[in-house]
Amino acid sequence: IGPQVLFVQHPPVYTAGKRTEPQERPQDGTPVVDVDRGGKITYHGPGQLVGYPITDLNRCGRDLHRYVTTLENTLIETCARFGVQARIREGLVGVWVENRKIASIGVGVKKWIAMHGFALNITRKSLPPFLAITPCGIQGVQMTCLEDEMFSPLPEGNLLKCFGDVFAALWEEKFHRD
Image (spheres, rainbow, N blue to C red):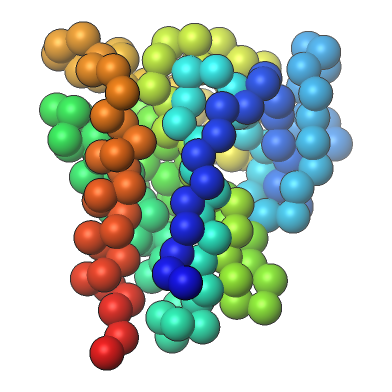
């Protein structure tokens, strides 16, 4: 089968990637779960769209960088469809609106099957927990959300479909094999 994406809404939780140092763990009572993805600590919870693509990178040349770039571009295009001009920042994984981070990406790979994924901040309620950590180990980063970056109210119900359509189209464009 082709790539699959599992969408979830986590209860409040911090996930600590392989490079998280002990002193980077928050002490605010929110659970911290060690995960086998790259990167440092981040937050997942209400107000986010969290997606876990499960993708066989054997089918696309075992190119992890191209895969991560495809995830970033999918999130950028999804934001654009809601009137938010997002972009990548050189040397930093994730998606940004100017100097504010709107989406985080953390990928793990086992036998060239990519797992873990991304968290796109949708509403303001996703932002306060980031104050207890250094998100993704980036000092001074300011987190943002679609709700704060849009010039109109956040539409209901079509965000999952929008992301799915964009991901499918970009996947086909970047990785399709005859």
